Amino acid sequence: MKSIKKRPNTFHTKYGGSKKDSILLLLKIKEIWITLGFVGGIFVLYFLAETFIPHKHHSLNSKVIEKISSTEIEEITANISSKFVCNCGQCSRETLTLCKCKNAMEERNQIRELVGRNIKEEDILKTINDKYGGLKKGAS
Image (cartoon, rainbow, N blue to C red; front, side):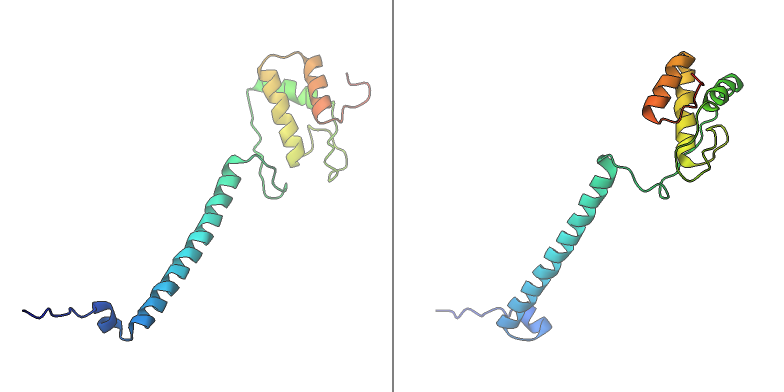
């Protein structure tokens, strides 16, 4: 009967050590992969939450861009926004036409959108006042 030669375990011979050491090394590698998978999963969940869950960030982190329209829409927007004061609490209650804060820009953008959809001035005044407040007395 032929004798069967045992093939040397290349893992043991390459890295040295016993079979017990190789098992410990494999367990450590699994721990590393599990840890990396866990950390990666947290990043994926954070990215998904930031992307798909609606939320408001602090006003310093978000930027509002003023959407300038045609001259006619800008004139009507200026007329309507002059009837409101800014309620941001950081300005000296300037009219929306003068205030340069984020809140005032959002309100002016909302007014522009409503003017662009040909909504009556009275309805725009009511809509903006209901949403943001700040309508001057006697301006309606």
